[in-house]
Length: 394
Picture 1: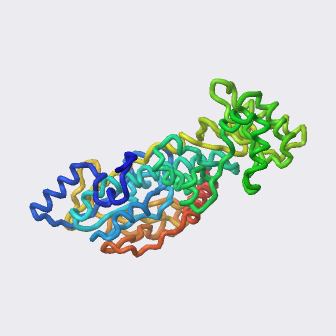
Picture 2 (picture 1 turned 90 degrees about the vertical axis):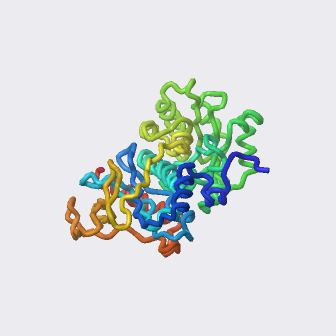
Picture 3 (picture 1 turned 60 degrees about the vertical axis):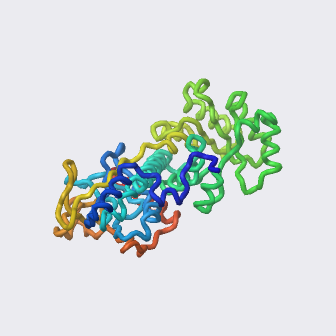
């Protein structure tokens, strides 16, 4: 008997998580013996930010592997702007094959890449906001628990330094990160909770004392620093009803710790954080951020899949650009350029740099011919692009 309202891997592979009209379309095409080769592209119809991070490719490929189709894609982790400099939507993926071979997979493929890209994009924006500070994914409690590893995987890929869930950390092959909950303070009292944590928990885990459960943050931060000689940091999770000006609280705590010689004790903050709030808290002295809801509940990147060519002939519906396309990238400024399949350019129209083909063939007749990088390589790729954006001022 199934306990939770979630689909199994096999349910997704069987197309049971698709929209019913795709299943009916498949039935009609099979009954009418319609066999037509198509080129279908995935483009972002709306990006809520100045850039997005393309993510979710590897899961989409796992779904399509073994099907009689060819799949092309830009590199997972690529930062893009939705459209190129000419306003042409950038096709992040394209499928070529008999449409009936992948009819029922449009919905789950979009689900993979839309949510994964949304989380990775939010993590990248948070990474920019918190500069060199530590940022942790704390958002799994706001979403269905079955999604915990999915959320944490793409939060880490997008730029987070660590994740809180046990399963999420297992997926990225890291140790889970976290401090202590208010429940420990409530049950043991502040001092006893800090001391018990230090006594029982492995020394590999940083000693970060939660200091806002009952008393004033400044007073309690000083007390924690005096009690735990190996204290790494203090965490403020001050509720909104008590915050007032949160940055001023952080600045005051930082000052009082510093004048007592506890400059090495870092200040971590959590609760209601996003990229708009973080810069002010960083300026006040916070050097660790636990981001929850705004990360796990990130806006999706709204991709759509559209058939743009049937049996070699352009056929896009209105609002879309017909015909098979290719994607080039400038090696210098990383600008993406979309071309018709017969067009050629050698130099970037933005900076004049050398361009390269940036559409990689992933599946050939359903066989995987591409080696995916591991999660740390994907994350490094995202961070390198963010640094290039920072340097260019974009």
